[in-house]
Length: 264
Ligand SMILES: [Fe+2]
Ligand SMILES: [Fe+2]
Image 1 (spheres, rainbow, N blue to C red):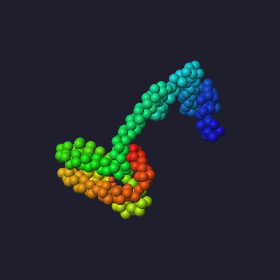
Image 2 (cartoon, rainbow, N blue to C red):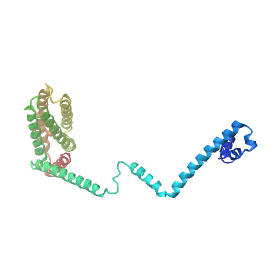
Image 3 (cartoon, rainbow, N blue to C red):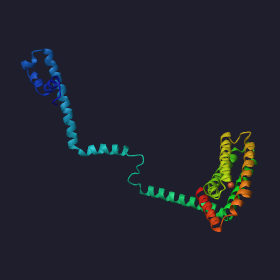
Image 4 (cartoon, helix red, strand yellow):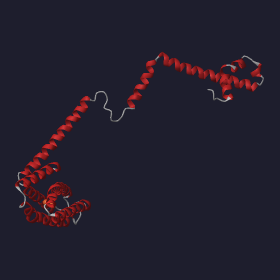
């Protein structure tokens, strides 16, 4: 209020004081006819504005709940999209129950899958079983034709998962153990070949299941990975295993099963 210009202060005053005096014919403000008319207009506008403000204040005072009624919808609209509201108990309970069932089902599936594989025996026998399972998927892929794009995609997905799990068990357990037993060269060679396996999987995924060279690529891939598997099964793993104590052998088997469980 203190910073208002004198002119604005004058207009404001005119609506309540000088305007009234002008209306009543006061000479100090009514010497100029236009000025008197302007003062009258300002007075009328000022009164209308004052009455409007007074009515608003009365409405708020008379009906305080009205303000609350207006605020309620705003409060509802402004709620977060992540707000579940007052009756969220059953909803959250159902969500938690669903998550628990899903977790238990996934846990059971992993247990079943790795449990079946662990029945194969020691770590090298488990890995050899996985080799056979992967080669069986390759054979199903090679038995498809160009029109069976959906089947090809499903088989490629299954093969990718199987090889990913298998490579993880070897890279996280067996190859490090090989390096500790001074088999660094073979461990590094085999791990490098796992990189080529991923490149084959990427190429098949990118070329599309209806590609005319899809079968050729699968055949080439199978030949490459079969050679890798033979090296593991017939050279590297037997040589490594024959120097292991029973305790070391059991430990590697246990670690391969544990890793396989989480990757299943
Ligand atoms: Fe391997
Ligand atoms: Fe292998």
